[in-house]
Amino acid sequence: MGRRLGRRGLVILDRDGVINRDSRDFVKSAAEWIPLEGSIGAIADLCRAGYTVAVASNQSGLARGRFDRNALRAMHRKLRKLVSAKGGHIDRIVVCPHGPGDGCDCRKPAPGLLQRLARHYGSDLAGVPVIGDSLRDLQAAARAGARPVLVRTGNGRATEGALDGELAATEVFDDLAAAAAALLQE
Image (cartoon, rainbow, N blue to C red):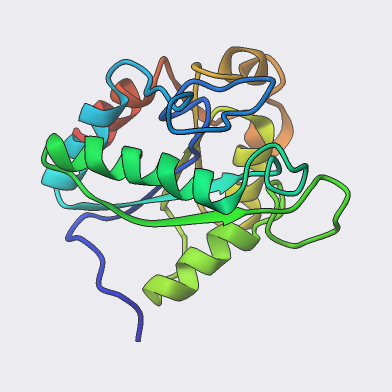
C-alpha cells in the first residue's frame, strides 16, 4: 500500500531549470538556490488544486564533490519553506547522487527515480505529468510510461529544438507557472 495521493493525482517536477535557476557550475548551496519567477506560486497552486507534488532530480554534483548532502538538504529545506509560505507542500524529493559514468538506474534519462516515486505512492505513472527542461527528463518520463511536459526555462529552449520521434508531441510551456495553469484547466 503506497502513500495516498491528492485527489487530482501526482505531478513530478525536475528541480534545476524548472523550479530554480540552473548553473553550469552546479547549484552548490542554499544561497545559490534561487527560484525562477512564478515557480513557487505554481507549486502552491497545484497543491491547493489537489495535486501531490514530488521532485525528481539528478544531482551529480554530489558524486563530483561540488557539494555535500548537508548542502543539498539545505537547498531542499529552502524550497520546502518557500512553497509552504505560499500554502503548498513538496511531498517527496528523490535525487540521483551518481555521476554520468556510474551506470546507475536512477540517473535520468533512466526511469529509476520516477519508478521509485511510483513504488512510494503504490501507483503507476500512466498520465502522470513529469515537467522538465532537458531531453533526459522527457526521456525518463517516456520510459516510465508517464506524460512528458517541457518548460522553456533552464535548458528548455534548446531541448525544444531537439524534440523528435516519440517526444515530438511533447507539451511545451514557457515556464512552470504556464504548465501548472494548463494542468489546472484539465
